[in-house]
Image (cartoon, rainbow, N blue to C red; front, side, top):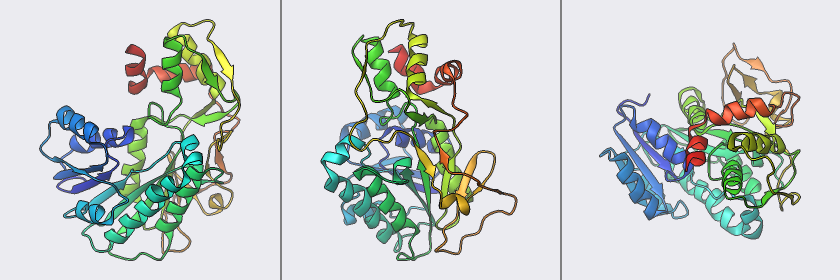
Length: 328
């Protein structure tokens, strides 16, 4: 499905975007267009990849004309551009509305007049039972994507993520840097739970949605989970730190204790395979494969199968991004 095709990756200079660009450029794609606001990171990626198939557009999804220009000649879209830090969203909700909702609306509008046949929109666990401005903005983005207000010759799907190890939104790099510098480690709640997905697995999810998704479908990848306390203890073992300087600060504004990727309503009509959940849109003529199994419960990080310290340690040591951060 990748061969000879042109892709647009919005927000392509972020941690996920960079991993996705690497995946696409290792295949026989025709061209990859990266739309982002960060000129320094665009220059860095241009030097890192050194691939003539990689093109950059400096701009913002908030601008409809920039979005429209970015779609020229594009076959498939991965929409990763977003503001995502929860504490920042609580202080600047309008900024999150403009990027996460209006920016997505601009893309959906422009897709109707483009050559694109499928677009994948990235969302978050925070869109499920949203309690913060970031989650609310992503929940509205999902509603826009799955609504019947947009029509054209393309399919739009959603992928929903929890904690991605090594990404800029993950607490794990912060823990590692604090441990290495012997600084105070602020832990909101040791019993807080988080999913543990690698950046490469996050790319697997969008590629699966690209290959298997129908219009309006939502996809979630199955991932292990652990408490924040267990993650921190595992990092202490890896870095051989016996007595870390830990401060229990309590939850930050808008922060959830547990991550939920499928809610009680979605699980009633969701299906699953060995690796993924698929939630068809009830408002669109979406079909799912007959061999898929129905989902019985909500999918949350607060399960009875949480990883222990040894399991988390093994998982982290196998992660390329974590290895890189530790070795610096």
